[in-house]
Image (cartoon, rainbow, N blue to C red; front, side):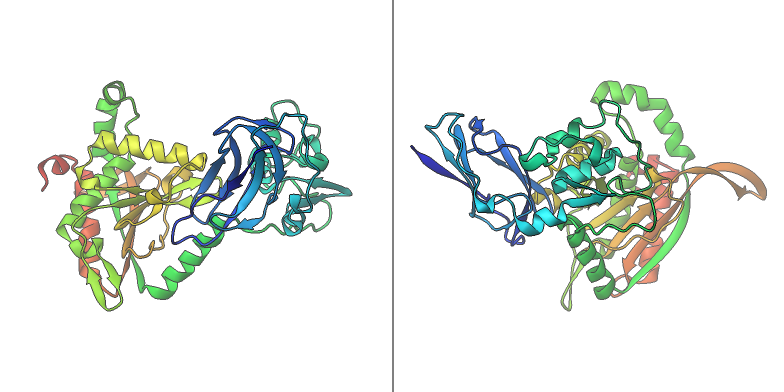
Length: 401
């Protein structure tokens, strides 16, 4: 018998611990080398733990929901074992606290589901009592949740209510925050406590962008293999404004102001785990096509939890697009250590006055929150006006004026 350990991967210096989500194999299962055994959730990303060698999963040392640190032993593999060599389930197979957190009460029926499975079922609107769990003791695994809903369910669940709860009476359900959600909450509170946040607003006529997009969108997609959206124009307009007003691209470090000679733009992206902000590095050097491709890639990998720590670290300015969800106006919160963030919203036909006449134009309300400790109102307002002017006259972006 040759036993090797499966270890927690090395976490970044800023991440002290992580949570195990859902074992994909059970003791006695044969596994191939590099086959993914479990997902490990940090406060920033989800990491996959592959099998270091082929063999039989002999023992699971840390169960679903366990808190772990870099280098801890998660499981043991017998590289010479056969699939029939099943080890007795260890006491550590299930972390008691994690099992309790993953247990949802549905009337008088107790359903056991892993945290990852619960998330998937919630998103699908699938009642856990209609899902047959294939894990230990009937536990619903991530794979079970992914397959759920493909066939007609036994019981429909209202999409506005948690699918693991009965709507009779006055039900409540306590669900622990994911590491990402807890970290986002911490950073938002930190931002509001540490920054003197003020928001300035403006409106932009999107007709020029709409006309340009309508004229070239088919040719653009054919040439570059990606759809021509709107966010790339906002990125380009923001970079143009940051070049004119460098303090908006700066950050505070103690009593110093750090002016950045580069433009790393964070793009807020929604994911099943919560909000993440991957970074477009050197956005000033990217073409519209480059930006669209990168944003599409970020969105896809955010949904799958495949973004790396490096991609979520840093940034000198951020853009949050609530318009994709129908938002008319918002006051975005600064993403520290940055000093400003641009909020963009839904473009709607509105009545506006031009040359003394009321006309209908596709308008978008812009909001820029900024740290008033280093950015005066003048610079903030002028920077937002520069963004507005670039969007209303896209040729400015080509001429750098």
